[in-house]
Image (cartoon, rainbow, N blue to C red; front, side, top):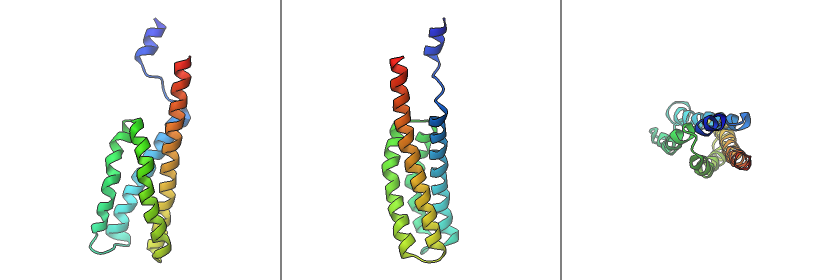
Length: 132
């Protein structure tokens, strides 16, 4: 009876895996909020049309919230575009824009690390569960 119950209910992820999920979602939301605030209010470039750059970041949000492994994998690749933009603007812009760019770089590094660790630890946990 116990084996039937455990087979029907998914096992709770280890705390480290759950933590990486929280960090990935939080840093993605941070990148979205930063991009909007930066381009619309804090240090706008042009007429605010660069705020559209956050649209690709909104796409993976549902997949991360639904805990889809594939989303974690491709977000870890997508984030490097925003990292590159942050580095270029951190060294090319001045004042508040440079500071915001460094914040973007840090958020990108957190997002990449969280996604990479999430995938690695989930796969390791799945192998351990299959072996047991």
